[in-house]
Image (tube, rainbow, N blue to C red; front, side, top):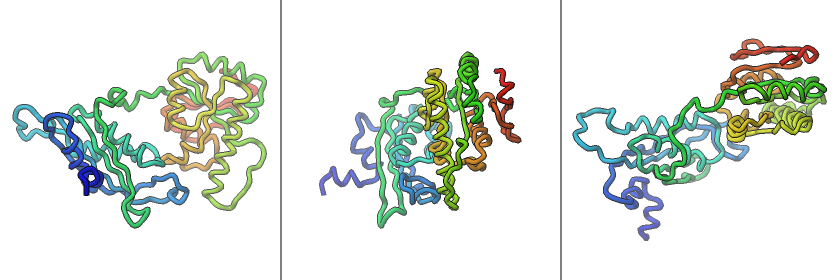
Length: 307
C-alpha cells in the first residue's frame, strides 16, 4: 500500500505528523468520541438519532518555559469536546462536512491552536463507518474570535391576515423601518384550509409550508419585504437593514430544541422564533398576544395600530 493511501485511512494524528509544515509541533487528540445525534439529509434520518464518531487532532505551539503542571497554560481536551458539543447543539445539520468545518473553526479560535484535523463518521448508516475528514489551519480563518452575542437583536412584528391586507401596511413599514433595530416580520397560514394528513410529522411540514405561502403573499404586497429561510440569510439581512419575512420550515425543522408549539399556533411559533433570535421585542398586529411569550410583547388591533 502506498504511503498516500495508508495515510488517507490512518488516524488524523499520523496525517498531522506526515504533513507538518515546519518544525515539530505538539499535538493533542481526542479519539473515538461517540455521540448520539440527529443528523443527515435523508428523510429517514429525521426524527431519529444515530451514532457519530469524532476523531480530532489539534497541533499547538510548543510551550516555552516550564509547564508547572498549570492547566491554564495548555489547550485542554475539554475545549475540543466542548467545540463538538457546541456545534451539535447549535442547530440540526444535514452534512458531516458542515459539522466538521464548524468544529475546526471553533477549535482554531483557541490561541494555542495552529492546525486542526477533524474526522467525523456515521457508524449506523451501513456495514462500516461513513465519514469525512478535513484539515484546517489558523491562517485559513477569515474571521476574528466568535462572540456569542454579536448578532443584532431584531424587532419582530407578527402580522395577521387582516394586517397583511390592510391599506395601512406600507405606512406601518415606513414607521418600523425608521427604528434602530433590524425588522423581522412573521405571519400565520392563509385563510384557506390546509390539507389534512392525519399524520403528525407530515402535517407539521404542510402547516409550515402554509405559513411560507403567506410569507410570499406579504412579500408581494411590498417590495421591501424579502422572504428568508435560513440563519445565514437572516443574519445577513439584519446586518444590512433588510426587512425580512420569516419562512419557518428550515429553522424549525433544524432546531435541536425545537418549539413545543405546533405550526397551527403561528403567534406562539413566532414568539419562539423571537426568543431564539434574542429579539428586543415583539409586536402583534391583529391577533391576541400569546401567554408567557418570553419577551416584551405588545398586541394591537388592526384598526387601532399606531406604531
